[in-house]
Length: 184
Image (cartoon, rainbow, N blue to C red; front, side, top):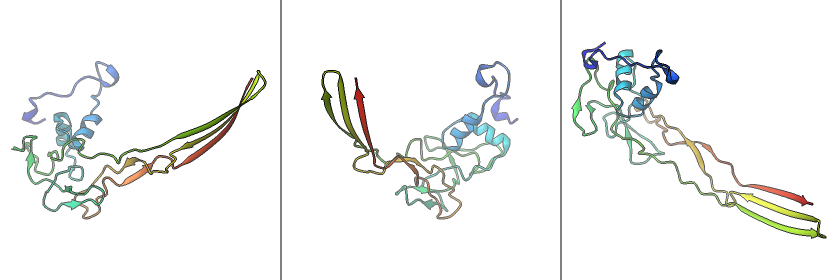
């Protein structure tokens, strides 16, 4: 264990137990997504993971652009920077390992969601006891394509193949539903 950790080890267990293995996957995921997570940084350093493909840095040399996120350049870092853009080093690790990206959290947004639903119904009475309702529903009437998921990964070292932001799933297209409802 390096001196920078002051011999502190993660403690506590998963699911509220007092003993056990510390649940580190959330720390690593947040760190790899560009968050400033010292536990994630420590785990990556201790495991010696190659995280160069996960680090997002705007304007780095050897960077690639993305057709789905215009105006952003992805690339591996050459210098590790804090949130205040001050260089720092991780003992025993050279960039891009040990660096977090400078793009920041929530810099990308999903495409807007628009859906117009319509219901038309007509009630017909048969005496005092029976009533028949004719119902027609239209969901997403204007058939707008609503994106439900996008690719979140970009390997800046893979050349011009970055597809972060590319739609990977969409909500349902226009649908119609017809019904007869008999009340008595």
